[in-house]
Amino acid sequence: MSSRIAILIRHGDYHQRIDAPSALQPFPLTEKGAGQAKKCAEEVFALFRHRKITINARIICSKQLRAYQTATILGAELSKLLSRDMQIVENEALAERSVGAVANLTTGEIEAVVASDPRYEALPRDWKSKSDFRLPFQGAESLNDAGARVASLINTTLDGLPDSTPPAAQIFVGHGASIRHAATVMGLLRKEDITRLSMYHARPVCVQRDASGSWTHVCGEWKPRKVNETPVD
Image (cartoon, rainbow, N blue to C red; front, side):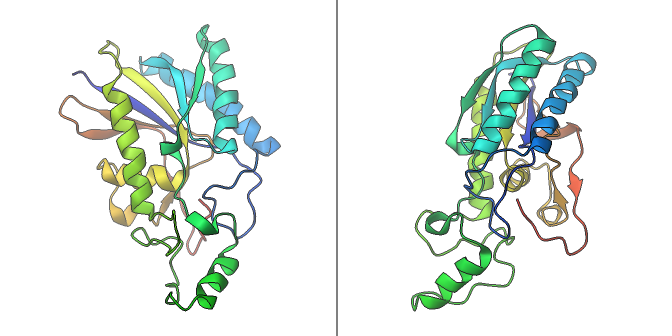
């Protein structure tokens, strides 16, 4: 099997509920986010020209509206640039980490629910960003759970791409935290990198899997977090 390329893209800026885990928030892109998605197409097209890759005509995105809209705008622009139709395929496996039954509540509301339930101990201070922590609610995942889910989808999808020269590339539009944790599963980031790195909105990070299954970073930058920055992805 020849090498494969994964183009990993976080959704654009969106109308996120303040102080609430992004998780399954259903809100749309902002005007800024739509502009970011449009500009993203130019960056992906530059990869096509300069890196000499074969971009799959399907863009796979999560089912959250912000990711779907990002993929739709990106696909429309790429269709013009590549002179061929791009298709959008939604996949639940690209979702952000789920907080289960407390989805779309603020962190304060979640902590209050836990405090009022005699079955649960108080949450750790860093519960929102602690990679192996899972809220005690039905349907909740840890960040590591989400990363494993996304990494599995990426690998399975690349397995299905045809051998080609130049190498085949698949675009994934998802969410910052679950993509970063997938990158640790894939050996692209160290666990200690997770807290100091994020992803830019609608900016591609391009990674390559060789014939042996090993991953390397090709291009595109992770976003450094500011000191004491509160995670919102």
